[in-house]
Image (cartoon, rainbow, N blue to C red; front, side, top):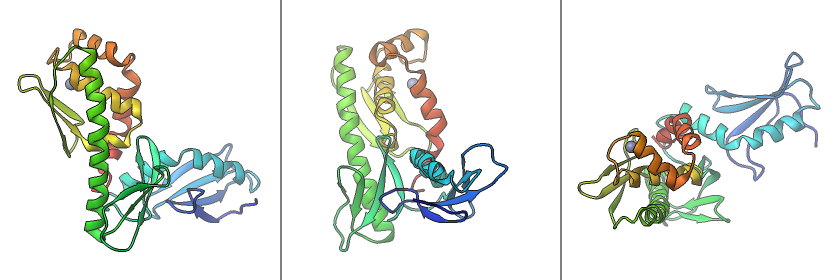
Length: 238
Ligand SMILES: [Zn+2]
């Protein structure tokens, strides 16, 4: 397959998702991807036209990153058909179906299909994401509670502006942001471990972190992941 300078194509091979613009720049030393916020597109740059094949493959390998960056730049845009979001760290395309049916996860988890228009569409998709978040976080919370010999807690799902979770050891309640369901599974698991470990130590002391480490091993990569991607996940659909 040959590509040419200036060509536009869908980022996802399935034929949807954000637009990718191909650009040849003889002075470029290597392949690169940048976000054109004004155009709402990703631009992939290669030194030669022949290099575009590799450049497209490179951009597609970064599709989650690109979708997240574009989502941050388009703040205030409600969830809508054609958008690509991530679910458990994997890209999922939003599609519309006629009628007012609830959102469903289809095609082996690569597509969310929902009825409704405008706000109603966005709400249905968000409700699905909240249900997915609740199921996964309940399961992971349970695993960590048992590992620490802890009794049950009351768990709730919220949509906080910036926090990922909170734990009140006194009331034995844990709250999570549903938005963490967009993160890769080890990050979701780390968040559950983080809140459950607060039942043992309410602070962030070295003793606390050693409990977290007992539950998930080295937690630094997952904390860094949340730091790097947090703003993007908190911006989705807002
Ligand atoms: Zn904490």
